[in-house]
Length: 113
Image (cartoon, rainbow, N blue to C red; front, side, top):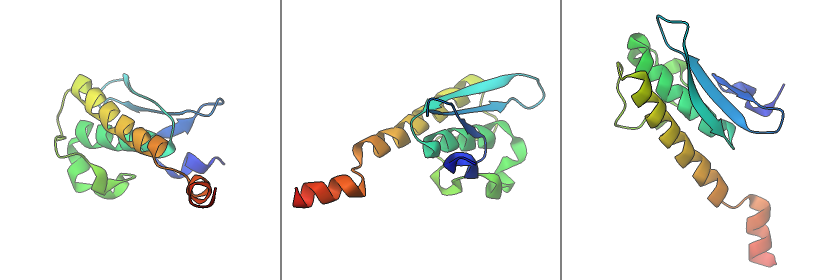
């Protein structure tokens, strides 16, 4: 089992990137949420889409990966296109944090290198 399997709504591509998509309720359509470097970013994208596309989701925050990380500009009932944009923007911000935050090994090298 991959390390990202602990998050709902994501999967890892064989080349190492993480992807997220969700079914649009009431249709057979899938909404592509993007490809990300970290599983956390893909999970945040899924959380936002789940929350916005499912009217009952505001009462079921326990089903989200990171319920405390919902941006203030999201709300249930948004259009799929709006959801896709908001979810992608939030997930890319998470990825940017992971890419700019040094790992413990890098911090050690900076401190003692």
